[in-house]
Length: 352
Image (cartoon, rainbow, N blue to C red; front, side):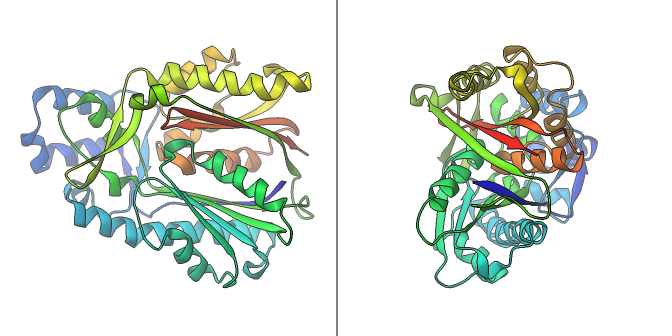
């Protein structure tokens, strides 16, 4: 499998930490929450948490604090298909592949539910064939990009499949939930909205850099499910985020990395470019320490986190796009995501 095109998309609304804090303080929610919740939000949004701005699918920040099932469902339906289609069209344009050439479509999300799924909306908006093989993956959280790509790899090995369109889209503002739990409050301060897409092909690109998928691996620990997950409460998604996440992410990322590299006689220092899901500043620091990385190895993840916040499953497409835009050196690249489950996935890329 080769990645022959990358595309990303975000809503137009871009908001700073200071703007988010001011909007929270002026909202009705501020008086509903206790002093600890105020302290958590203020601390996260005033300190250097690795995030400066986020893109949210609202015209004004006060809309974020309209939190009820119908409003959130409407926000997801209003923005997820549009963002997914925009990212997909940009990936197709970069790949110089026509929509009619796409044989399969895989769409991942965890921040909303549609039936029929998002795949039908994306196919309609960008003009895919009526006989396209369409798959909707849900419930994989921030980790979803790699399973999405792994399914793409399997599809490309089947007869009659030459090109697969991979899409991850998250409208995290459609999964907004507030209460006095510190993890809930931290989540509200971290996540942004966006979509990423990749065109996958049996053959390397004839127009851009050669990005070959060489091997991948996955690791899932259901016993750690409660460390990071969504639960349903009051008809809405409530994010559970615990202090164990940075250490879990780093441990699982190391295990997946070793699973892929060691049989091939490679080590962590064989990797020239790291394309990692960030999660947050603390997660990046844990990854750097556990993997014994050099300062700057995670610069693309850190830069995307600072500009966009945690984009959940879409994040790694932004990181890969940033590395390619910066003309990162050819060689071995490592692509990895982790999240709910607790799950972690990784893939070795050979980039020319």
